[in-house]
Image 1: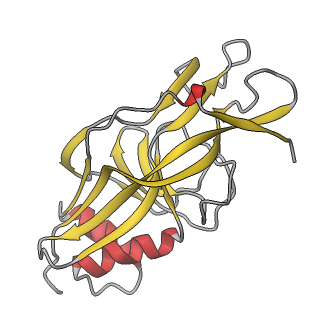
Image 2 (image 1 turned 135 degrees about the vertical axis):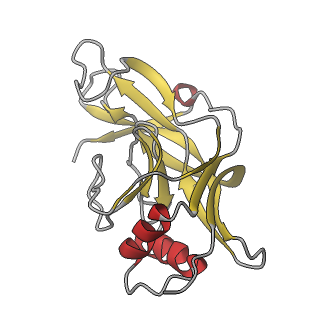
Length: 202
């Protein structure tokens, strides 16, 4: 068995300069007019690196997302009621304690599974495949833009694992306490003020 490298995932505070049109989640109709509101949401860089400084991969992600759990008809799966700018403003470098290879995205269909725990219910998982695929939501998780299978493959590659699939590689990396995550300090934007417009419900 090959020796595993230490791998660090950093959710950075560096904006790419791009924006994404996201919907609030779990309720996406704030004014109850039957349409979905979309909010202009910043895109952030995410880095994957190992303990060999020359090896580093860069991805894009949705870090802060609009959250609206209508107090008049709240979704019982979520404790917070009302409006919030969801997402962690900061989380120190910490060893990842849990990876769920069977996780499926809740707010939209995604062909990509798996989720890396930051803490509690705050996860890193699949997001939209492109920035133009508007209408994704989140309740605090970091959503990776692009092919999440390739994101996991980058973790496997940088770990030096000889496992045949990324799920097994990440599970063993977590078991060995060699996968770390860090969320760099950033102020959540007041997304309620950045309403892009409304679209008809599919």
